[in-house]
Image (cartoon, rainbow, N blue to C red; front, side):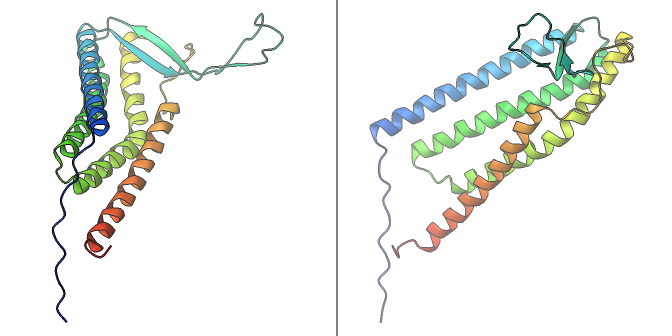
Length: 213
């Protein structure tokens, strides 16, 4: 018995609403990329002048609630925002380098999704690119969420030492701090890994059953 090969598949053209949706996503992604790079530029200009904003873990996260009203029983804050200036170039360099890597990673992620939508729009295969991209994002988000707090701890310590601040008297510390942003990054990495695995399995099953269903 001779099996007749299945006819080649033809790609269904995108509907108008799908094309509009893709263009909208591309415009938003492009604007976000420009904004991220603009913020990075402003940050680097300020850093070159010895100015920056630091977010340091509070030593005593519980604050006074006196006078806030009988309905308020506790005030809690985990970080302190600190605007500093006059930081030496060598002292601010580790912090500036770390922030630059973070900004560039976000920009690269946006460019990846922009490229992905372009492939979808042109009807080109994107399965392997999607799987690989999600895998890379999962790796960077997961590893970054665990390593960056230590890197920031070192960078903060260098800046505080350059400013001559006595940490024994300060309401903040420069120790390792795994905060809400790091938690979100870790969760995002886990979900990216799960989506990458699911997409890879789905793509493989689709290839294996091509022409049989």
